[in-house]
Length: 283
Image (cartoon, rainbow, N blue to C red; front, side, top):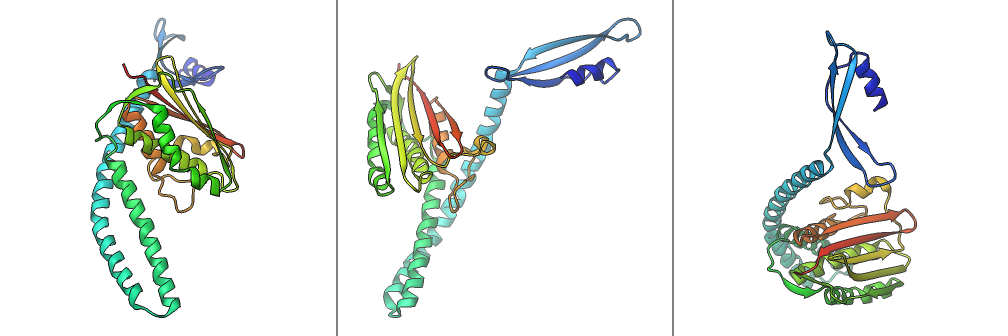
């Protein structure tokens, strides 16, 4: 900013600029508007500024929602077009597999069927992404939803040498939600954590109610996320895992936002990652 002021004092163009201030607290965005005073456009300078942090955040949120809506429509269209041919191919290969007697040929077809199964899983994720906001909501207990979704990953976690730690303080942790959708969001966070700990580790899940919100935290001791990737992990189709669809975290993020909540992430490479979900308490 100092360089810009010097440029203005030297006769530079009077064009508004935005600067970010992040010293010792949350970053704030300011719009600075310059003007001159004095006879014949003298060198006196006036700088007016306005805090536009919330305005820019709303603008980015609206732009993101518009992009996600477009992606959702595209995802639904692609998924419906692809699903039927995939089903037909799978049935034909399955029938051919049963007719073959040569082990190498049967093994090759088995591998092809496994790949088709993986594609069918991606198609289902695309459909899930497209319909995240369609389920009816009711008042429900977040701790029960967390426990129900944890049950689904317990065996997988144990096989991978991962210890599950529960820190549940569920008193008053009730929200207005579509429980199956929230379960899907939490499940996606658990699976992301499990995939980040191929050599085992700790998966800690906490639930608490405070200041009019229910807070759910999912923390792992895995590989962590590079700081340059943190801003992108909720983008559709962005994946740090080879072969990943890049939809799991995006679906979780969209579900949480559809419930009037927010999801944040902090991470240290080589140390682990923590997701914090905040949901408004039921009235």
